[in-house]
Image 1: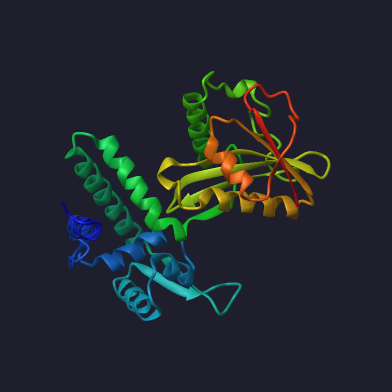
Image 2: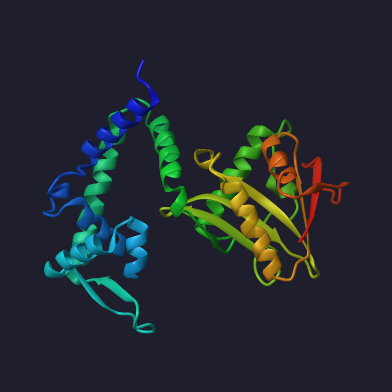
Length: 290
């Protein structure tokens, strides 16, 4: 049987070959993968050159060469930032926007063809999600969002679905407290979403009150991203948001059917307390003073 390192290297070779990482003409558009990735980053809304460089993991010299090649093709324009002369920004030209759309269409077709090869595309996608989360964990960001945003609603839908599967009595969000997350937004609270390369992979809500007490609600991490420290990172972010709002006491509830949640709270400074609400689902209650 192949050892773990050999299996990883086999995977690396397969992916490198499949995506055309070493091709001089990535997806047949006349430029290598590096230049295509810079063009894609700009097309996806990133404009600050230092941010793009960090996001792609490029050194300054290579980034400069790639930008110069795209400028010479007439696909991008670079300029000094309007509010900070120390920063430079990049934007797509009209030709650049056409090229970005062409790459998007080709990349989508490549992905669809790849999935069509396998008899179990859902299992293949699950494996890809796990790998993507593991490789991209250092680039994942925690962002405050409206709980009605598309990303937040996706996370909440996945969270509710998981509770329905794991609770013996099922789960109906309408029976829980604050099902619409109305108090999980400023100035009373906050809703935080973990984003990895544009995809939501976790969330947590801070449900505020009129005083200095708030509750942590709706902590969820995608199965593909578990074991990477993201739940603790979301909790830390929620505590930071609470401090910024002047909240001094946090409470939360959970169910013993979620032992990993109880373990997280017990090892991060929370203490178990008596029941403090009439929600029909939780059977464990915690408090933390900030």
